[in-house]
Every structure is written in C-alpha cells, then in structure tokens.
Length: 278
View 1 (cartoon, rainbow, N blue to C red):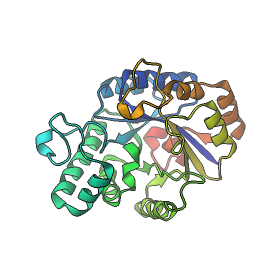
View 2: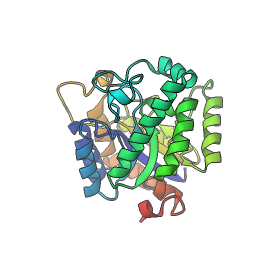
View 3: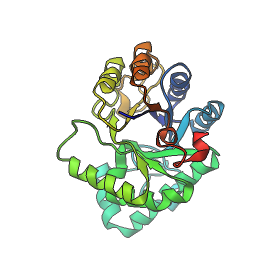
C-alpha cells in the first residue's frame, strides 16, 4: 500500500451523520467525506466542511434511494411527487440504457448535483455514487461527460480485494474508462462487503491485508440514535463505525504503514488538484 484514503459516505443525510463525520475527522483518522447535496441537512454538512478545511469533500451522487436535486416536474420519470427517486436499481438501469427521454432526465439531474456542489464553494476532491450506481455504463458515461466541466479529477473504483470474480471483468472495464478519461482513482476499496459493519476489527483487518496501491476505506459513521436513519440502514452499526474511526489502535496501525494519507488530491499529488492539496 502506498496511499490510504479514509472516507465517510452520506455526509448531509442526517444530523447524526454530520456529527459523526466532524468527530471522526477531529478526533480520529477520517480524511474524506462524500456529500449528498440534496440530502436534508446538506447545508449543515457544508458548514462543518468549511470549519474543517483539512477534511476533503467529494460529491456523493444520489440517483436511487434518496432525494433528487431537481423538482419533480423536470424529471417526472425519475422521482415521485415528493422528489424521491422511484423504482429499483435494476429496473432503472434498464430504463437509463434504453429510453432516451429517461436518459436526458438523468443527465439533467447529474448536472444539477454537480452544480449544487459547485455552489457550496468547496473544492471537489472526488466523486462517487450512492450504492455504486456508477458501475452502470450509462451513469458512468454521463458522469465522465459532465463531471470534468465542474473540476472532477478523481472517482471511486469499487474494487474490493477478494471480491466477486464475476464482477472483476466489469470493474476492469470501469478502470479502463477512468484511465482513458484521465480520472484518478483508488486501486482497491474496503467497506463494500462489510457495509454497515466497518468496526474496529474490520478496519484493522483491512489495514493488515492491504494490497499494493491506493486503498480507500469507506464507512457510514453516525452517532447513536433511537431509530434507523433510513429503513435501508436498520442493520447498520453506525456507532461502532464511528468508534472504529476514533480508535487509538486503528490510528496506530495507520501510522505504522507510513503511507501518504488524506483525500484523493493529497494521495495523487499536486498535479491532480493543486487547490485541494494546499
């Protein structure tokens, strides 16, 4: 391993998430957060980011299981009257690929989320998608078309060590697309198979077994609460993930690696994004 990026996803989704991100950065090993620009408390997340300039912020594009940035009348095939995305990822993936009208609405929404991030004034460190929807060829193509207009220079490659062999050829294709587009990316990821369960043991295990290259470890930390943040997160161990990010044992294990740490701009150097690396 020659580079390590530690990221929290879903920044802006809930007050408990925002509080955890700030604490994990100030008191722990968190170096990055991925912002949901259309989420309920995104504004507070932006304030936290501004107060913590060493925390690198990326765009967490939401195209399923969440709120859109555009109003329902402008993307009627994507959302319901409340502005929530409708349909399953499988069904929507088919529609994105085969239906030009739906694809145009998707492009408009992706553009709107990039524009909303730019309006925050934050430096765009990286881009990824909720539930890794950029593995879909249409979504990936639109991001690669739109993202560079807003300064996108790095994306997450959801390639996990010992991941599914059936997915390996597709991930190789995604990596080739990113390389051809000149978009930097991590080599490996940890947190996919253990989604919602990236506790201290999981983080220590990921560090101990880290392969060569740049590793991104991501999780979904949040402070304790009485009810799940979303129905899909009812089995997530958010507080354990927060504790892991603040664990002295994890901090010591990272220090022992003596690798470049931070956001994508830090790990990939000044040539990637001079403003973010300053």
